[in-house]
Length: 96
Image (cartoon, rainbow, N blue to C red; front, top):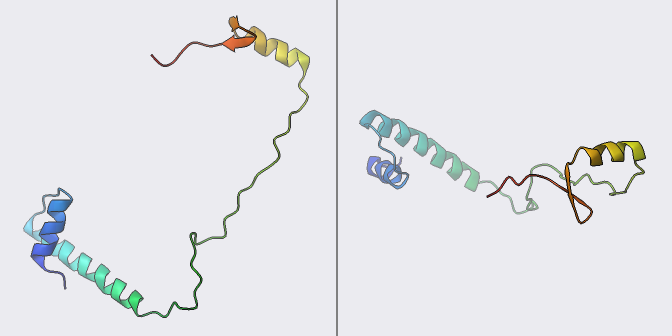
């Protein structure tokens, strides 16, 4: 079982102020966690391949292809921008 002064030290490192009741509660909880880790250490994992994710993850990607756009729609979008500079639509700055 983890000692009370060890729990107090961990709490100080985390900048937590714990009451005596909380220290006792965390002493029990941390001891349970460490006991569980000890149980895990007993497992034979020599044949287990290391993984970085618990699920088989794959990126779902699609090709980035330009599509033909309706010229009328483009015209309406361009009209929505009041300012233009060097062929680019100009928007208000949001940064100072």
